[in-house]
Image 1 (tube, rainbow over the protein chains, first blue to last red):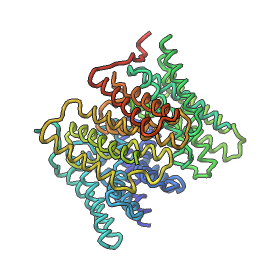
Image 2: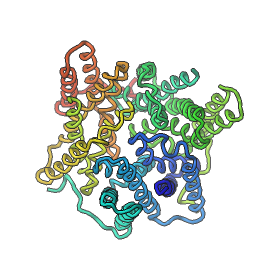
Image 3: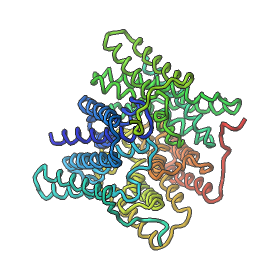
Image 4: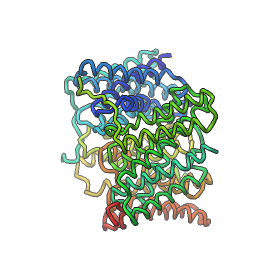
Length: 204
Length: 204
Length: 204
């Protein structure tokens, strides 16, 4: 049940981020809906395909696609009414990242996969939607942009979730802590400009 | 049977579009064949992976890859003989889009998936090949280009097919009507410049 | 057994190429690890998904992800100690290409797929990781760069492997010959600038 709502909210916020990104590219209405949809379903679809979970989460249950379409259309309506704040795309993306990293990690953990696979599955589930959005809208993927703490937030949140769950902390505490840490790290980067040292071929 | 020929013609026209796109990038011959192949198999492969249909359509039946290779090589030969018309890439893409949207929607409809999933599966099956082609050849994805009516054509065609089929119109009429509408809308955009209003963050 | 080691070495060298590519983009440490990981697992994951092989090679066996993480971190450490040679990314990529083309072709051949499917499966397994790396780091995909002999090397190596195996040459000779030819062709392009005629719309 928890997972169901995590996924529903996750697709909604990713759909908002997709609609906002598409809005910057002057698409017509159905173009916006398509970009929002692939952004929203990308991560969970990757998770289900990699783990051979069929039917894929959105294929047999129309709620997800209905929520995505509604979120995309409401975003369009809102934006026509008043311009969204500058950072709204990245904040929507941060929420979607948090929901989907934990969703992917939780399913992998319930399958008793090795710890490193749980973390990687969480990270992939969280980042793929945003990568698809950024590639389709020909933006530099957020995970690559300097100082976004994107990978750091995803890996830290997934590892923390897994550690707490393995220590026997009862559900849904590990999931909530994991999501909170991801959102906190991303907002720290977006709002306060928190940075990590970079690895660069140019440095000695 | 109908689906088999739809897919065969679909891969052929998408292979032509891939070969034309690769030709603009000064690739050697086998590079052209690889781009044509991934363009042609991308959409149907996505459809089969998402619906857990194995073996994937081209894996066990060599006809598809043979048709793709032949279409790519014939395109190379033709283009060396005389330059293709300006819009040939987009026209080949429009035909491929029509065939694959209906192929994806039809399979999803036969599986009795929810209506919104039928439409999304059709759209994904139709657009993925062209997106792969455009990303690989570092062009702006057609679905993003201003005024191509790409998403509109795909969604309208898939919905029309589904509506007619659900109303009991006998096969292959719904498929033919759906394909015709997709081609007509895309050609209207390509040839006559038909446009829809755009959604943009810059507008009030 | 042979395949297991081919895959282990393949992910290691692709991880090195991913870490080097990420290093050019000034990422933080975990960003480098994520790019290295998706580069390293991309091809084999595509192979396993297309052939419905579950669990995907890295999901249940932690060795692969451990090797990838170690390779990425060692690359970071080495590069901070001394700058890598100019061509190291392309050489690491050439080795990864060779290992994964043969890995994909060998599995497809053992499944007794049609010859053309064996070659395409080998090529896809070999090229997908590098394409993901190049798209994520917003570089022109190597397979598209003028004069890299990328597709030529992959197709020639896969076809040679298949031909020798079908002729009854005993394992692991076909695999070794296939890999050697791929590496030789790629190095010939990288080091000595060997070129093939290109196909271009601009030529008569």
